[in-house]
Amino acid sequence: SDQNIGSQNILINILNCPTSTRLRAALFDVLTAFCSAWGGGIDDVGREISYQVWKILEDSDMLLAKRKITQERSQSIYQPPGILQELEAEKSSRVFVETVSIIRLIGAAIHSQSKREALISGFRDAPSSIPLDLGKDSKNPGSAPFISLVINDIFISLPQLKYSFADARWELTEACLSVMENSIEAFDIQRFENEQVRATLDKELKSAASNPFMETTLA
Image 1 (cartoon, rainbow, N blue to C red):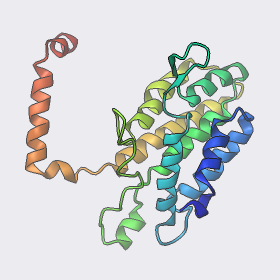
Image 2: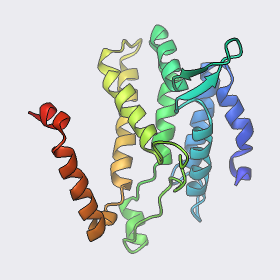
Image 3: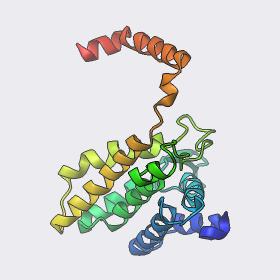
């Protein structure tokens, strides 16, 4: 509930306000500590906090591109995710404090079950820490847009960035890899054991493979 991490609206407003980089980074670090699998203590509190954090990230401008109406021309313009704007700003200082904090938050909000937790639970699959209705009204529901942002827009650009400190590159790399690792470990493959699902996927893959564009690309 909101009592666990404060008012969602206040947090969203702070994230969307032009505050200092270190203030926003500190806020992300606090959220990371609370929404991690161990951060909430017992009774799955950490998972419940993660649900709230995902909603905060979804409603903020930090990780999803938004379309905004300009007051002058009353036109809809595309606004890149805030994290990419901050990344551009941090390139000049070559210190990526806020970018690292945001990526760590995404990784912490994707819970993966440890061996000890699996043993205690009798090797039952742990419930997902990602809300089932995340992004339900968008073209790309779920956590995919967030994970794709980390991989396609940040991780692959790391070799081209310049750093004031050598450790900064490896902090960014570690944070990105954590998101990937947790995503893989948390991925539920049991759904693919369903014959109907497998048949549907097989049909879609064959359709994609027969596409002239795909044939040209893979040739």
